[in-house]
Picture 1 (tube, rainbow, N blue to C red):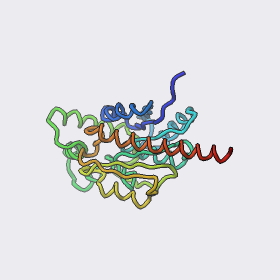
Picture 2: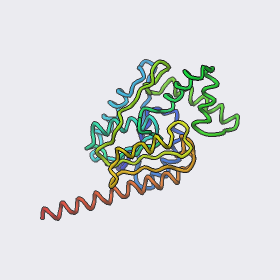
Picture 3: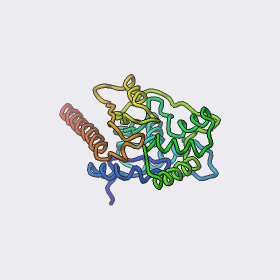
Picture 4: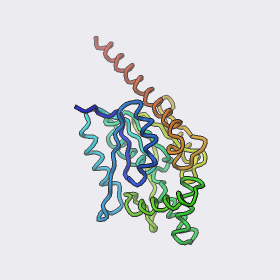
Amino acid sequence: MSQEPIAVWLTPNPVFHAFHSPLLNCLSQAGPVAHWEYLQTQDEGSSLEQALVSLKDYLNTLSQPVHLIGHGLGGWLGLVYTRQFPEKVKSLTLLGVGVDPALDWQAYYYSLFKHLRCPKSIILEQMVYNLFGEQNNRMTRYLLEVLRRDLLSSPSPHSLYQQLSGEKGGVDVPLFVLGSEDDLVVSPTAIKGWNRYLSFDRDQVWLNPRGFHFFHYFYPRNVGAKVCQFWGEKEKKNIQENQLISNSIF
């Protein structure tokens, strides 16, 4: 029988899978990490609702609560799920998710599109820099195609006509929020905004010095070490609490 995961990485927009893989390799040192993906069909409207149903169905197949972790839209999905089903989640780790969890790269893109009145190609080139920093011509062309594909296939509910806001607030499980000091999409201020909703004896906020919005791709070891440490602290605390309960019974 295969071993169940201790953690589940959430990817509702699989075009970014390659940028998550280095971190997933680092996280696997802590134990089995499952990679959940949701691929929206072209017939579906852009909404997280169906992705949430699919995630619920998957996590119901697991016998124990797990650590949930996601970047951007994946983190927002994990946040929505955790608020509904906290008993299924050991902890929640959010990468590049601001205090307004709906602020993903697409919301930022459509906001620029409306205000700058530039051709789509120019806005997307700007987004490549905002998300990944300076790149050579070959990498820029590749990243432009990735962003175009995500605009077509992601369940992000944002569009040129509306950019939604997410529900602010915390969760009833340990929460770790990570960001980057030079992220132009989800700023350090947006990450630090979580502090007003955190339990300071349980939750954490941490900023990597650099790496833009995909800081976990450029610095997977730094980020992986922080996340594994957070998971380890929560596992140790759970063991101690279980021991206290067991001793009080007997």
